[in-house]
View 1 (cartoon, rainbow, N blue to C red):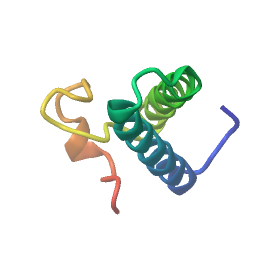
View 2 (cartoon, one colour):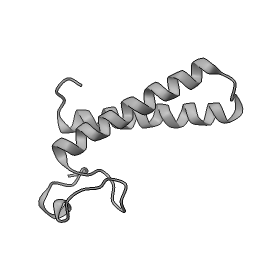
View 3 (tube, rainbow, N blue to C red):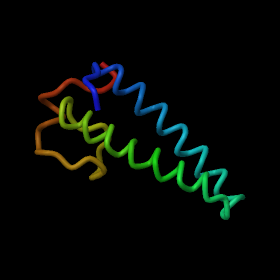
Amino acid sequence: MNEMTQSELLRKISEYQFVAVELNLYLDTHPGDEPARADYLFYSQTLEDLIKTYEAQYGPLMNFGHSPTDVGCYVESQWPWD
């Protein structure tokens, strides 16, 4: 990924999350659509990469074990919505 600011990364993550959810819903009713399945896999993998990039630079996006991190990281870093 090319260098993006924190807000650019958050926006891109939101966009890819939206596309992944929409494709997932579509595939629930069209399970044999292979091009849509390929798109879903592409967007899901890219989303995972974006989240890893964000978390490496700015800290975890989610709690409760979804974004493993060192203890105390939440206290020391800026929150995503700040």
